[in-house]
Image (cartoon, rainbow, N blue to C red; front, side, top):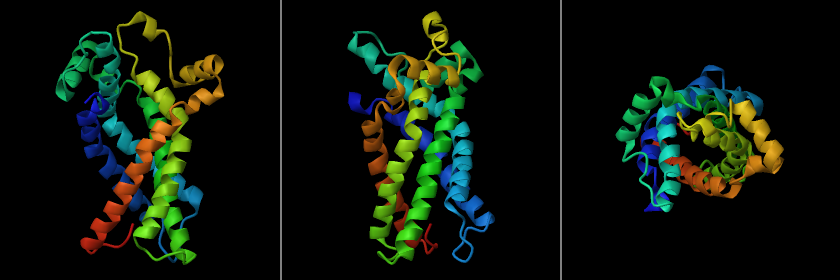
Length: 238
């Protein structure tokens, strides 16, 4: 069960994060003329995807903070110590009590940077790849097109977001009140510079395969299910 530590916080986060970014991107794309007769370019889609991700992540950042810390508590348990939090609401109340309301948004800047890159890669790449596959008549607008597009989307999102994810995780895992940690990283830029200086530039892609192992299946399951549900509901394809 240690493999699923922080699962409840992760699900809680997605209740806010995923609907906002998906609906937000589609609304922005359609508002700026992203239709078959006047398609947006890939850079334009990437920017709109990034913006929708930023908005969603700001709102979901407290739940993301709880998820990161609950997952990090596994190290304490390995040392025979008690975890800091017993659940989502205990974590939220403890953070507010010890760090203030602003503590819920600790690491929000690197979090937002990561969200911009993830959604720039995920939403724009899926949207563009699916239309490319269908336009080149590789296959129709069906599960095969959705699978190919989601695979490309997962790889693009992982490659783009991994550096920001490394910085975000290190920043968010700094608990207030620990003098050693408080002086370790002043901000996301300081964290980025120190990580590269001490561990080398490839440290920014540390955890690439675990990240891809998470994003890859997620992309496939989400997009195929989402497209299928839209079809059942009589809505147009994403």
